[in-house]
Amino acid sequence: MEYEIKRFQADAAIIGGGVAGLSAALGLKNKRVIVLTKSEFGRGGSTPIAQGGIACAMGKDDTPELHAVDTMIAGDGLSIKGCVDVLTREGPARIRELIEVGAQFDRTPDGELSFGREAAHSRRRILHAHGDSTGAEVQRALTEAVRRAENIQVIENCYVVDIIRRDGRVIGVYGIINGTSTIIEVASPAVVLACGGIGRIYQYTTNPVESVGDALAIAARAGAVLSDVEFVQFHPTALNTTVDPLPLLTEALRGEGAVLLADNKRFMVDLHKDAELAPRDVVARGIWAQQQKGLPVFLDARCVGEKFPEKFPTVYSFCQQAGLDPVKDLLPVSPAAHYHMGGVRVDESGRTTCLGLWACGECCATGVHGANRLASNSLLEGLVFGARVSQDIVEQIDWTKPTVIRDGDYSPVMQRTFAGPDEEADASLLRKTMWDDVGLVRCEASMTHALSVLDELSAKKPKSLMLRNMIDAARIITTAALDRKESRGGHYRSDYPEHDAQTSHHPFVFTGNGPWC
Ligand code: SIN
Image 1 (cartoon, rainbow, N blue to C red):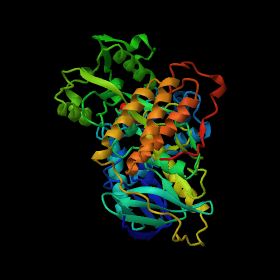
Image 2 (image 1 turned 90 degrees about the horizontal axis):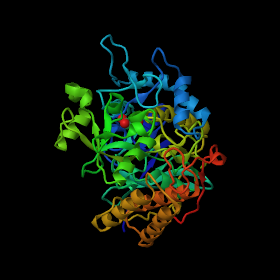
Image 3 (image 1 turned 60 degrees about the horizontal axis):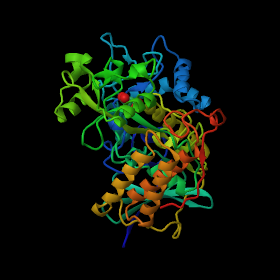
Image 4 (image 1 turned 90 degrees about the vertical axis):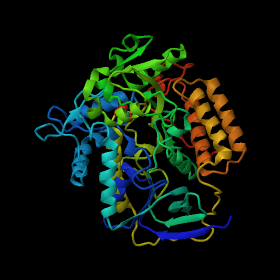
């Protein structure tokens, strides 16, 4: 294939245009920043569709310490205290900055910020915007701030292929503009991975098309250490329709009193003292167990009443599109892959183990979420650690040395970015295999089967970068899940259903050498 190469020079190249990537970009005030987004800037990725709010200890009866305690409990023994403290302590300042750049959160009639309650939070501390459209408001405010910033250039529709390294350090990235043979090459001493999660490697997910595990695959190919990758959070209540991604029915509905029914009975009351507000993994597996018995599960959110369209406009519109009226109808639900707790291992500054490579947002593992993320902590994590990454880049890079990419530092190898019709069946097989074999309930036999399917798929030498990355991410997650012989948080093994105290404080570090697809 004949490529046209467009060359750029930056002080920092940021892969991803969601809350974490844009927070990092905006923190690099006097630097030349290039943000590479896989789809249209401001629209793709998880941030704009995040319904749940932002947890932040800003209420009068709340403290960062209380928020940290709740986060640690949710993390089920694997959250790293130092990182959790950073999150909860620095969160309020980052929220105030976000408000300064224009984000509008819901307020009480007397103009104070309004704080909602969600499962496993001991205080009312969840900020929302326009009811259930918080992510969209955060994205809007950050996107507009980036558009105003003269030092930031955005290159859209660019699917990053790989990081470029020489002599053990990162010197840039290259990507391909979707549907073209135009290569984008960015020479930069600092590269930030902020390109989201892995939900699309599962058949049922709330995640957008972008979330195919690019960061895991890119980082693994570059030799970076990954951590906690076996911990995938399945949201209990996606609307069970035929659309993909499945529409999310926010947990805030259960916070308002909505209950789960199978065979017309509430089943969560028998499974946990907090019933529908038990930790997400418990509720998700509770629903899964009913489904395994052949019983459809419904969310009864009629308690919200006539205010439903005003309080939950996004959910209301999803229901309408599915021909349902949540004020009157029961809503069919299913668990769906929602969030990846693990990822590229980083320290408190967002530094990976690869010199010159940082990561923030869902694609990284700060250790904040441990084995299970506390609801509404992810937008906050993107804000806090995105800002920390920018500060660390400014301090770490030797700005006197130019960064140059030479011929031979990389060779363009891609034939295509997204999977074409010829590869759709393979992508579907991968997603079904991961759902069946490495999903809410896993065991050695199912995961061994998954690995054999992944081997067959990679033996076919996929043409698309997307499918290649999906195979790599799926293999990484499955290998780590096979290795963790216990159940904890989002990782439940039917052959090892108990916690193993021995492994409780040893996050799995993935340093596999491939083979990468
Ligand atoms: C939800 O609103 O249920 C999702 C929020 C989150 O995942 O943090």
